[in-house]
Length: 366
Image (cartoon, rainbow, N blue to C red; front, side):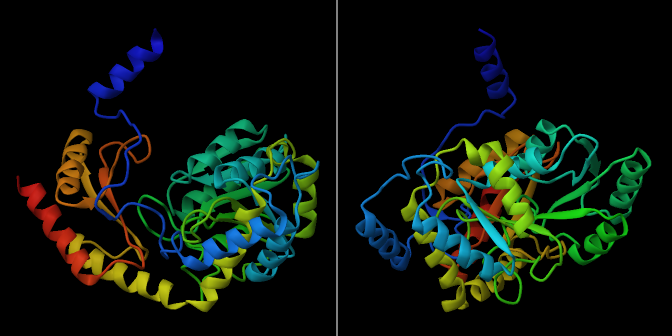
């Protein structure tokens, strides 16, 4: 059958993927603040279960699946992120898909960074809006694509970017993009998946304080739980509730998870040392692993290998040395840039980072 032949083609090209259990010291997950095992989150989850006894929500939010824990989380998140309203989704992919398939309509346009997450690309592709791809973090390219969209009669334009890019670890020029979006009367949509809890003066993300932006904050990375929060004006959130099919027709996330997310947001303030430690260790990891390149500024440190087979082989040798680092290959990253994606978290020590560097250099020398 055609599916088996495609699997064989992927295996031959070293692009076949399969789930692999964790092994060794974690240098690959997105648990940046180390909250996924935090006792306070377990306590919040158990307390929520004891309050109403419900493991699952029992239905979609517009039927009987809306619970007090959802309402409390959304009210708290709105204040936490400085937005009028927040809406809780089951995952970041679902939230991005809902945003772009709902807000971007016929005669609209979506201008997106070429390296933005697949969930945004899929949402934009599934919408009836025109799509315009801008070169990565290239303001001139964004301006050119915005101009093209306006000249072709776009009614409403959305500019879609990540604040921290998940494979390169570099930061978007949000201040300049905000100015550009205003010039073209466009709406800036910022996916804060890899910035939430870490960046900004108070861990609110790099888009903190941007007027008029729609932001998305995933809850399964630095926050250590699951789901995603869309933060926007009351008008936008009200429209999503009434029009977003992924929200309307999905069973609501378990209420106990909403309670754990709320507690995680509180911990961002209560244990601010975690984000300070991560960013300090990230600089150390960059200097250890990529000493001849500029520091991108985040907790994600890519070690570029190049060819797919070489990246897979290198990852295996590093894993055998006791470090859980995975190979990232196209189409997730551009052709010829297969890499190890090293992810720093608050639980790492300076000694572990040094040992990882030694292991990678030894593996590359074999």
